[in-house]
Length: 496
Image: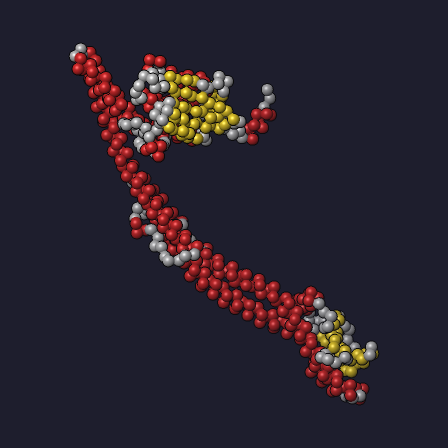
């Protein structure tokens, strides 16, 4: 019960863990990033905008002062009453108004106390960088400064001057900044909403559909209804949907085939187990036929024994392939010629059998491999070659099995060559596939499948180089195992 409860908890946990909260979803991230980027763009636009606002504000005040100055120039400003001068200055918000003609400055209206000027601004010669830095300075630190603003107005050659406090200027700039900030926030939210709505419809919703389909398919991959429904889109999302649907279909088919194979493998293992016992009993009984002197029995008995031996070998091979998990190779430096001699001894070949075995490996050639696994590889390849050549008829036919090898740098290559009839087309098409790559009738193809697996475990390759009538060549390529740098350094530092 505890195991079942644990399995149920494990099955339920991934679905909850793979559910993305709304706060971390792509939609919210897209909305926030779009609003942030628009606000950053507005900030970059704000600096030249506030600088331009300051210059325009000062130009308006200077233009008003110029209009008043045209009237005051025609009058005797000294005879103007003080209250009238104050009214003129108050209307403009200035402390003094002056005009410069022919290099001579003339003060038209002034407050009771001549003000001290903190900053001089030439509207005609103020650059963009200076305007932005000055506007930012006024906005952040202004409010109690006195400005002297001067420049020409319109087409008039006369230069007008205006001494004015920056308090009202800073207040106007703060109001302008507030309005720009509110407008920027509104624009950013509106833009983010529109971008979100468009991208949500174009991208986010289909991606969510694909994500949901993958999660649903993972819960029940054998259910055809969990495969994503493909739309008619021809963009990247449409391609992704079609590829996902094809992948789900292929995976569903593969899982179904694997389930059938697993069930079939279990049934075959059970049948083979019982059949092996029956065949072993039949083998014991058939051995007694050798003692019978009847010529007809003596003629049939060898064939019967070979058939039983083949059946027992087939059953044992199927069982071994189904339950064996090959360990990783334990690699050492080996003398390959001695290993090939052991393969020849195991095959039990002699000249009377009609098959010649040639060990063409150089006596000094060494290979970096697992001796047991490489022995099995060469034995399987050699046994297949001997069985193929044993079926050839004719006393003059050359039956020779040759094992040779060469070494290039850190890679060793072994060639297993025989003079047999060659592999049939079906065997070449299903090479290294168990139960399908057999070269002879009644074979299982397990020898090549096991050999291929063992060679790949060494990081090498087993290949069919050539297969024609009278010549079949298999190549076993095994690279030396790489040496780790830290181990090599530690070995160099180790005292002798």
